[in-house]
Length: 282
Length: 356
Image: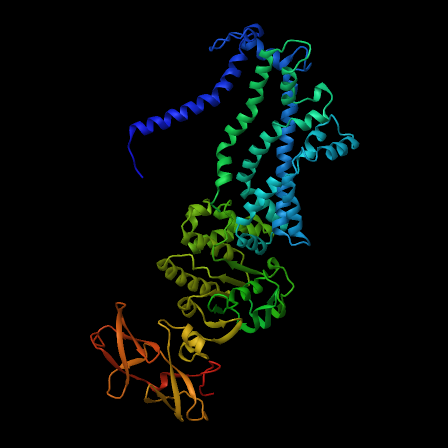
């Protein structure tokens, strides 16, 4: 339907603009707060234009950290978070592409069962299985290690499902052509499936990187050393201090810093990401 | 170069579905064998068994003098062209064609040499660095053929390679495939459901139906002397008319109240036996007072030919004649036929009741 009603168009844009303002304002506020000193924020009359403390705040946050609550510079936390998110995202991709490969292309006993078992784990998020998982990780002596942070979160039903669905759309003739061309299962995987899956991998990477970056409960449980805490935990610790004033300028700067890597990942991989989710060309 | 021999080959799928019911075919070295039949007749299954993509339930398949039943597809020395081309979408045309050779550890200069030759034969040199998605259907088809050629296999297998192309291109590629196969002299097995492709390409035509081979022969023989009612109606366009008839005596059959002579008819069929009589639309002629009367319902114009549609009792009949030979305003045709061109089939089994 082609319509040209300026008033309707105007209203539509107005509603959308209000929506954008509502979503964006708190983010703007956080960025703003990271440019003032503590007293300006605390007294409740923060101006809506940036202050002059940005350099000082960011320097102190990244290299020194909140003086009382976290005791570690946010730079360390960012590295921890980054290692964890990268580990989880790449680990998930690796595990799920392999399990999807097995489930789709190999006929083994209880193949359907295996798939459904993987599928059912979708209903068991970390929170549900947290006690047994903690027990296992603790018994293996993996507390306060990157391995402990990453390994239990790697198994991914979502990823397996996504790759399975993608593999199902690859025509069987491609597998048969490979067979006739003398490629064994591993060569088929390496030469055909992996190159074709690049966009799916990118989509999964974006989703899982953000998932890993935002993990809170699991790192909170298994990290005890300050040097192992992640940035999400760091923010929380900075805000709820018991015996001192919250250093809001540091907390806000940390929040802004915590937003950057996921935003960067989304922007960098946006095109591949969208392609991976809507891909039809085979 | 090798001959392909199938001996009593059967395929039974899980659930006791018998897709191929004991097939014997022998394709001579350098021959072009076409398997034709309606969908679900087992022709593709048979081809995939020769390729090694399906297991063989029982029987024996030989390529050259090797029994290949238990041999991996890659080791059978075959190349296959698929219906949807099955080109690797992420590889360039060059890599698509070279992939199989690299997997076989063929030296680089040998690969280059073979590819250059195949590209020249197929006229795809300008596209070697492109990806398959940048090519048209016909070009992709050529690349798929090229991938088969560079392997220099003993046998080419074609699985309905032209069915994704438009009509004009199909005719063109059909001719090219035939020329190419002649030039290379490689034994070929070709599956199609298109009877025109089957007739034009093959020097050995195998008509299949419901897992059985109905007839094997050179195309003209299959067309001129179909071994069964099924073959008669499957090969030929428009299909052969099948009308009920009654045997009157040696070499005479009563069709729609008219007695017509038949040359090719088995001896000793009891008079009064009900049979099916096959009359090709193009063999029927209009004229003479004593012919079979066919009321005309409508006339189809094909340009060079006209098709006269009518009903003879319960059965639909079609008569094909060069445009202008029969006055298209006629309400009734009086049909006659050369006695040598009448086909007689058993009403029950559908087999031809011919001499010898």
